[in-house]
Amino acid sequence: MSKKSMDIPMMESQQKVVDAGQAVGRVAMESAQAIAKINQQAAQEFAAQIQARMSELMKTQDPKAAFDYVHAEVLQEAAKEVTQYHQQLLDALKSGNQELVDIAEELIQSSKADLIHFVNDATNNAPMGSEAYVSVFKTSFNNALQNFEMIRAAMADSFTNFEQSVENVSNLASPKTSKKKS
Image (cartoon, rainbow, N blue to C red; front, side):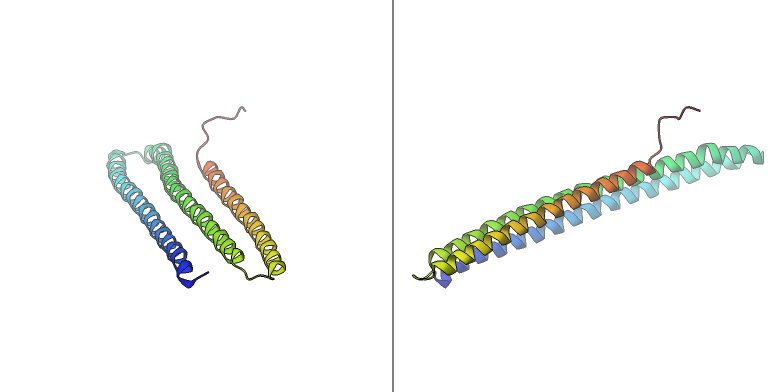
């Protein structure tokens, strides 16, 4: 196999890595922009609500009425808003993470195909008399690919478990709508 025939697949492989890097950068930038937008909206809403709450509180003359107002209206509303804000952040992060997983999966499959092609080219052009070495090499290579697939599957399971854990934490933080019977 000539050096020139090996250079073309290597350049294509390098270009795939560059493209994947650009896609990861784009996803990270989009996630950061989405989070910045969520933060800006939350800050604007918070400022408007503080102003409205303060003007309502200033109208109240009775300390007990002020306490009841803060407890009943302000704190419950604040808890609801924090939960909504938290959910918006989780949605933005989850979307970006899924896109990153898709990019990584595509890059892994492409690299795997390139590596298999390279090994097949190299072993097909092996000199006469090296059949035993080629057989051992191909067997080792296939075992390595199987191990790689097991590791990749375990990582995919780990990512799924992480997402479920994040959802569980989110569910714990959100207010319950059903009331318990006493």
